[in-house]
Each structure stands twice: as C-alpha cells, then as structure tokens.
Length: 283
Image (tube, rainbow, N blue to C red; front, side):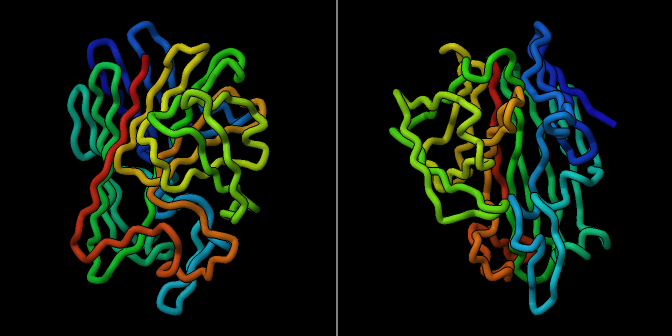
C-alpha cells in the first residue's frame, strides 16, 4: 500500500513497506525521486535503522551474545503502520517485535513524519527507547534523485567549504584512506569516477545543505541541519545520485564488533526520545 500527500499541485508518495518515499512530483509532473529500476538499484529512498552502513561480518556482539544484522538494518524491509494522516502529512510507525529482537535486542519505537509544504518535503524522525536500559542505534536517510540527461551536466553546490574530506570504503567498511576533493566556488562537478570505490563518506561535514545543479540551474536542495555525516553514492552509468544525511556510518576495518564500542552510534536512555529531521526542496 502507498499513501500520497498533496499540496498546491505538488505530491509525495510513501510506501508502507519501509515507509519509503517513492515519488516527489511538481505540478508539471516532473519526478525528482529515482524510479527504482532494478537494472541499477531497486530502491528509492530507504530508511536506515537501527544501523547505517555495514557491520563487520554483518553482525555485532552485545553483553556476550552475537546478533546478525545486515547492511543498513531492517527498517527498510518491514511494513510500517500509518498512525496519522491528512492531505499533506503522514506519520508511519514501526515498533519492536519478536522478529526485530532476534536481530537487535532493544525495544524501540520508530516514527517517520512526512509533511509536504508546496515544493518542500520535511521528513522527521522520532526514535523512542521503550526498554529499561541504554539503547545504541544509528539512523540515516538514503534518497536517490533522478538525473535526466548526461550525468556530467550536474554538479553539487555545498552551503560552505573549500574542499571535502571523504573516507573511502574497503569491502563496505570504513577505511583510513581519506580523499580530499577540492571544491570550485563550493561546487563539486559530478563524474562517475568519483564513485569507483563505492560511496563517499563525509564525516562531520560542516555544510548543512547541498544542492544538485544542472548546467548551473538548481534542481534539488537537501537540508540536514542536525545530521553530522553525509553519504554520496551512485552506481556506474546510473541516472541517479543519492544524498544521504546520516547519524552513523559503517564499521571501521578495525572495529571490535561490540556494538557498545562502535564508532558513531547514538545512545538513548530508557524512555528517552530522539528527534531530528531533514528537508528536500525541489525547483
């Protein structure tokens, strides 16, 4: 099932499966979200929870027990409930279950709030620890934006900065190799060669918004004031680019495997609530 929001001719559609944004259209019918063609990548904008990226050996230990947990966690593969909706807003919820406790031994409640305001979509997250102890977690967004025409016609313009420091991945884990990418007038020209070694992981990025430009004309702006990290990713030849605000990132190559020692994890006290949001604005 899907839920479509509308406001002054703009529309956004969210799938109950994964609470995934699958469409964001302007009044003239322009589609800004990648169509999910499995030839390149069969998703649109998955929710990353309770981890971001890949764990070493696809698992972790907690209080002496071992748990298997695949890349980006399980929320993107589960059915959410629609708990509130109006013409331009919808709130989707996912709570812990026997199935999730086998992979992640924490009692959580995850809510995702989509609110459409003309050409801007606000995506809010609430994570609640319903357990009695501390709950480590990561959270991230993974929207893929459709890029019509030549990939090299596009560039990224960051809110600030003269260069980017990107940690490169090694077998899906975060390596110590850092690549410095110079920006020209805060812009990074897009080329598939940037992604030959998979995603670019920008830890603790200073810029809190980035725009996709096509031949100097702004197409999309992603704003992520609270998020400390950003991922950039596409596949060779694919007509899309993912701009991914993250709380968290993959295990490092030297990770111990103990989730309590994992870099970049958030920790919620019992009954505490974590709230954050980011925005997608289209032009």
